[in-house]
Length: 593
Image 1 (cartoon, rainbow, N blue to C red):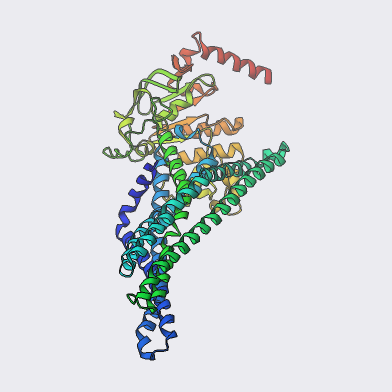
Image 2 (tube, one colour):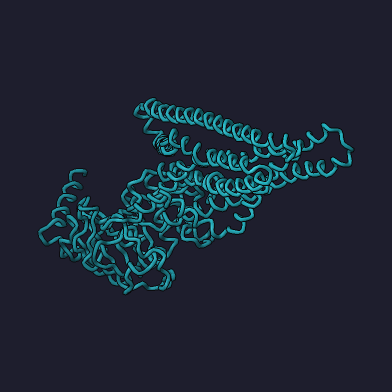
């Protein structure tokens, strides 16, 4: 139950001196409050006897001292506590994002983008309560309670023990009762907020489809239901908070009443000065301020723990705890770096798949796939949809890890190197190109180098984007829009090709690179790729058998296996999928004509 908090506590170690200072300031603030109220009571009682003003001077100074010091200490404690909290959030958020970015993309497919957004924002933000509302108040309350007990023990041992008893009731029993009454509320709130994030992200991303099919009212209704449920939980929590405050005040007045009961006889006996009576009673009441925040700590405990579990569960499930490839075996994450990156333009050596097997759970996608492509070789992988062609790319780019078998580039097994090192050797043109909500310049400059405007314009021309670029209002600084909403499918594909041209990696991987292009543009793009990639290794994945004479090796995949190998001339004369597909495409061209 508390493993998540133990894990969170590890993030506090770099700030141990700050935490110690914040706790001491918190204790000092509470003790200054006790001193302020106690000395004020003594001053009023003593002043009622009308002594010389000089006799009250020390007490007057004490009241002023405690009043000023309480404000200063409170300010310092809040400043330092919030500084620690924001530093803690920074570490947790960056650590979580870094962990997610290192994990195989396959492990994240089960999560909606809204769920990931909720984890990165709401769940991480919820963890700010861990230190400022859960961790610190408990420590401060324990120290202040013991100091208050020791102080009151000097005047009346029975009163001190009863005060300590009610402090424990306020600090432990009442919060436990409140937590029992509010059980599940914190988790439900976290879950509802996560679902609201998911729904709102879906609404924003699919707004056109929602309007097109007239289901906006349904989305609004679902959002209204979630909002009402969340508001209902918050109202119930507010009522429970009111009950908690009532119990706190009841216990405080009981402790003060018992202290009065035990100290009054001491005044009558002359053991205790009459002016000290108000000091003792007000000190008892002031000491309860330290336990008032513990109920809130218990309330936030559940929601904070749920948020921590969400983050831990996401990284654990995405990283993989099962055998199988979808989980993505991440045991080697963080152990890379022994092998240097291959500089752009340098020969990378042959790409080898050696008896590679991969599956989604029990569904086998690749079964014993093996092939070798030499440096500078041009290979095409063809086959029907669902035969495992795109999975080859995901394995080669280390988005997935194979269940068994090995993949190597230039004699280096990919399982022994970081994904970043592998991807430095690759230029990938995917059929689902992602466009960031940023300028055209930054969308092309993903390789991390500061390319000149002349270099960028050159690759735009080679990717047949010069006419489109000339119409942009702000040139390279034009914001393309989230997911590239302001560009067509063909323009998106050519932007991906321009990225690959700019990167100049030794290995090119192209997944249906001309799928969204017209015939004329397709031929121009293919000519550009042939010219630029003349000395590079090319792996071209497609289900269309056009331009196949360019490749010196063609691999035909069916149901996760390589069923045919050879060049275009060899395969078109053999019975099999390749020859059948050639006839189908020829008949289609005749029909279209």
